[in-house]
Image (cartoon, rainbow over all chains, first blue to last red; front, side, top):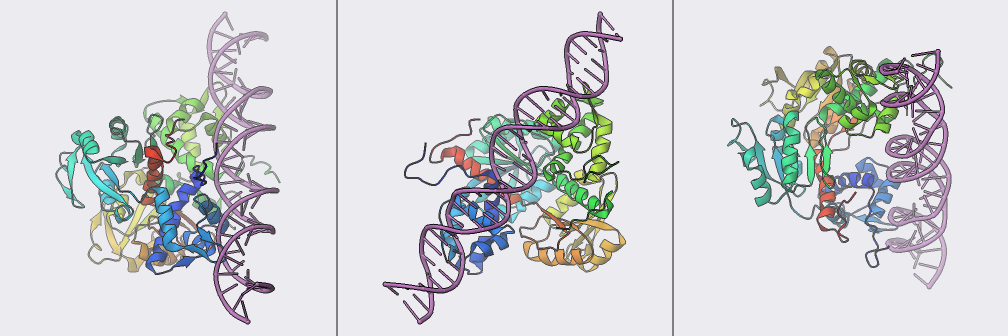
Length: 225
Length: 225
DNA sequence: ATCCCTTTGTGAAGCGATGCACAAAGTCGG
DNA sequence: CCGACTTTGTGCATCGCTTCACAAAGGGAT
């Protein structure tokens, strides 16, 4: 069944979605520098991808370019923002205010993209009550209340590994369906809940693998392409 | 051309490499709990992947399982560790000691996996001299000396976006070929240098995209599978 | 020693993403 | 108004990863 008036295909490939933020970042930089129009070639360069891929990605959103000219920077920023849902304001709660939680609370990249830190929670009475990034750290006991009253729809888990699943369960029970997990555990969640995970040590391990290869693997195959 | 004695294929798929740390984490947990043997089914469950995928991944390393029984946990931990290069000790330097750099320096997941933080560097005279995680923060001026004298082979960039490319260039000139970049910029590096990037706000944006879809896209297609 | 049961390792099909290459569509100068 | 030039949008071939499904391999019971 095709959508009649809304001809834009609603099924955007996951790989494309993952790159849209990249394009958005590059476009924002250009907008700040006063660039009005950009070609797929230049934008691809700035985002670190191949220009054919960029064009195909953008074509999934619609036909927003002008042949012979390129893309209007401001317009494209708006279209990508809208597609990603960044034109609305998202309330985010961060659970676990250790070193990482603190860093995240202070991270400017969130606020500048429509994400508002609406709550900081921790179980440790030692940190509850502290002021971080202009917010008061609350006790994990009020987790559900914070989520409901402040309309939190995305939760960031920065707790120790052992606490993550329990907090996750409570958060899901409170109706949250989007979770960003920094704890090094595999969370089990019901269908319909999205979990994205970031594991800092995994990235290092992948680097170590390639570094070992370069440094003198059995066949000494230095990255040559 | 097949390798004659070394039957193990040296070209491990990138997707497989990215999952090996996941298996390793699950296996370490099992080893701690005293589990001696594990089936592909159970390990896959613990790592959050499909069992066929797990078996294919492991088959790229060699034939380390026993049919009818499963995999020996200790032995598999060793094999994966060796493949990832974690049996050796890696010296890591962290450049940029803001909130994030601090969190990384204190992150236990590094040390426990063969990564040793061998240097903390920053340009801000205010933080130079501070002691963080048992290390003294040094001035960025001595970057090259630190890298050379302490055998640093992996550098973590946690600087502001504007400083990242310059630091990157210096680090590459000093001979480093593996970089983990937290700054929200596309780094340009010569061939043979590996860069992996982690952008915290990108993950949130991807979540926002899916959340928007769930909450009431044009066709109201709630994730139903 | 043989049979049955479990679980691995892998051939092959399926699926989605990538990249090439070009026709279509638009701009701009004359 | 036309023709040359630029750049988009996309059909198509290709590639790599995923998943299925099953033969081969081993363990344990009798």
